[in-house]
Image (tube, rainbow, N blue to C red):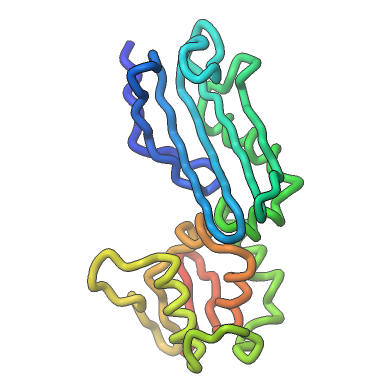
Length: 214
């Protein structure tokens, strides 16, 4: 049976890209996502393999999913965990992700600070948590512009650089505009500090994408 890997899988809201095995590795498919920045580093990996033929992650006798996650904040290790390495592994990506969520449950604040790896519901909870910051632009310390909407647009453009000449405002209705950034996209990349910053500029979390009143 041929096990053809997809191009990407998503774990904890983070897109993990397929990484071809090198000549020293046997059967197996590896997916890796690495993020490094001033705040720290997040590494998530997954493997779909059989036996102990692939970085010793796999369970014997059948194809299963195994994984690992490591998190460092300011050069200090917060978490290092191998999942499925010493047992029968996980039958699906969903089962592996469920276990990952259990592992990171106690350090959700650190993940939000680092950026990404949160669900859409967790992102909405952050917007609700900081609702008292709404349109408090005077609290933004390092202003990219003296206009709240331009500051928000510039911040979002840094997080999601445009790959075309499309506008950041994709639709408008009455006194409300809709931005060309979806809730799913933002959940996979934004930090809690940036949620506060966007809220202070008047950005709201809509049903599918970011919204602002005008």
